[in-house]
Every structure is written in structure tokens, then in C-alpha cells.
Image (cartoon, rainbow, N blue to C red):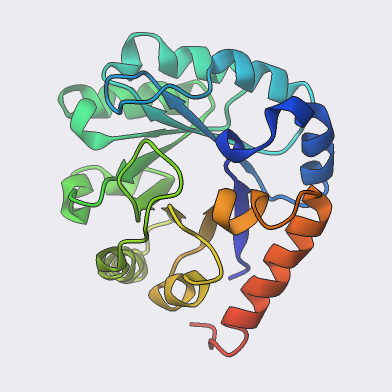
Length: 230
């Protein structure tokens, strides 16, 4: 399977928003937007308004990672209205209403994914994993960029890949956190499919984003060239 790259736009240079999106539109596969409420994690980043402005500049899919205590109260519909293609939620905050929320998001014509924190096991999703479009595995604690990679999460990626193959599920597997030169091979060997690239994987590689993108792709191909396709 071809590797998919999803730039995390909380790491971009927002002073050059239009220019950077213009560069990424011809290179990226999709965009990753972090929306935090300051409660689920102690940080506040992007918003539905940002998604709305981004949608004016791109036709690429926009994946929205909601780190919020009560996303069903406002944020889910606000992000879909703004142009989100996929809503990714943390299971611990929606378990009580999870089937209703899955149905609602699909009825709105949007895909749904679930994000597993490092301490959240894959079997948390067991009752509804057959209904979802994405499993995102955090390889850092959520909320802040630039944290060290947690190698313990590689077994969770392998577990998701094996479950997908065994049961014929269609969800994609994504990794969020420290996708870069030092982890590409480990992630690819474990079975990852979508790489969220932030500061260490993309935006910090060069001050010119087009050059940074080409460097990222060279590093990825270098690190994964000898891995056999499953």
C-alpha cells in the first residue's frame, strides 16, 4: 500500500498560511487539523474557523482530530459544516453515546475515526470497530508537538494491522506523533499506512516548504526502501 502523508497544520508557519497551503496542495495526500478545547488537553490550537478558511483554498480531504471533553455538543457539527472530511474522536469521551455519534457523523456525509492515546488499548474499540473508517494510534501523549516517540506503541500498530487483515475490516491505520526519519522504518514495518508529519517530519526540515517536502520524501524512501510489501 502506498504511504499517505498528512501534514499537521498546527505545526505550519501561520504567517504564510496561503503560500504554504498552495505548496502543500500539490504534494500532500490530506490535511490533519488538531482542535483542542484546553480541557481534554492543556492546550488550545486550531478551530472550525480555521477549517473553513482552509477549505476555501483546497480540495484535499481534511481530517479533524478533536481533543475536547464534549465534542458532540458543538464541535462535531461545527467542523463538518466548516468542511471537514473526517472527524477523529477519543473513545473515552464519547463511549456513552458512541453508536449514535457514529451514525450521526456518517449521516452527515463525513467519515469517522477513533484516536487511541498511548494508554488506551485497541480492544476499547471492539464493539464498533467494524463501523469506523480510521484508527489513529498516538505515539506520544496528546496535546503538544515535539514529544519523544513511544516505541511501546509499535505493538499496538501491529495488533491493528493483524485485526484488520484477519476480519477484513476497511479502516485505515494512522500514526500521530514523531513520524520522522528516526521512526519511518519502525512504523512501516509495524503496518502503518498514514503518516501525520509535523515539525520533526516536515516543517522543521527546511525554511522553504517545497524543499522540506522533497527532503521528507527522500528520507522516507531511504528508510523504507528495503521493506517488503505485505
